Amino acid sequence: MPAKILIMPGSVRTGSYNVSLAQAANKVLAEMGAETTMISLGDYPLPLVDEDLKKDKGVPDNAIKLARQFAAHDGLFIASPEYNSSIPPLVKNALDWVSLAPKDIKAYSGLTVALGAASNGALGGIRGLYHLRSVLMNVGAQIVTEQAGISRAATAFGEDGLPTDERQRTLLEKTCRSLLDHLVEGRGRA
Ligand code: FNR
Image 1 (cartoon, rainbow, N blue to C red):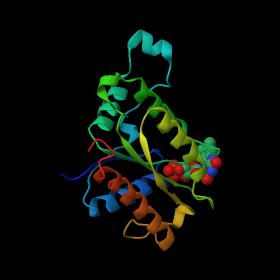
Image 2: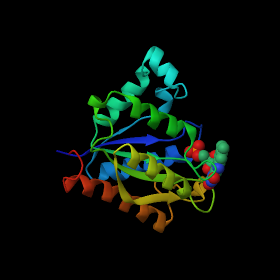
Image 3: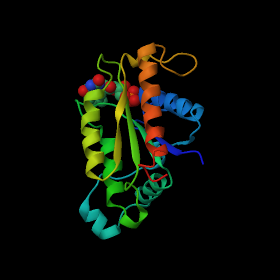
Image 4: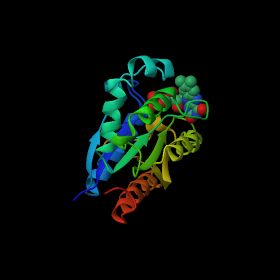
């Protein structure tokens, strides 16, 4: 059975570099034999996490739907922007809401995550990934070591949708391979 991988860009900006990175990861993972689903957080609008809101109205339907998407896949690839060296609120808020979803959904337990970031800066947004890694560890996901930072993102992607720079393309391929290897080795829930 092919590994089922959910691909989640951490931006809904028009022309988002991280959507481009997510599309590149989608292509690489599909070529490696994975069954992929790419989502947009724009389809899961959520209020800011608020415990009073949770107490009064429960966890929002979109958070439950997102949690079920996580649970329906073996692996997750997140392509996240870096905001002030850290996690953008869109991503953090979505991950926090999912962590508040009923535990029997099992959104995070056994979920293997691979991380990527794209930025027009020289570092490719990788400073934010340290924080994202830490958050995901806290909720019980397993995160592969390799990560794909795509720098100079405005011009990084070629006509085939992949990074034109060989080093960046190899990094993306290694990150995707590592995600699938982790599942094949039976360390995820696949
Ligand atoms: C940024 N950006 C940014 N980039 C970066 O490489 N390091 C950083 O610390 C920051 N900080 C930051 C803070 C805030 C509040 C914003 C809005 C932006 C720039 C960011 O990388 C750029 O907007 C990307 O285009 C965002 O990713 P998408 O939307 O293109 O996927």
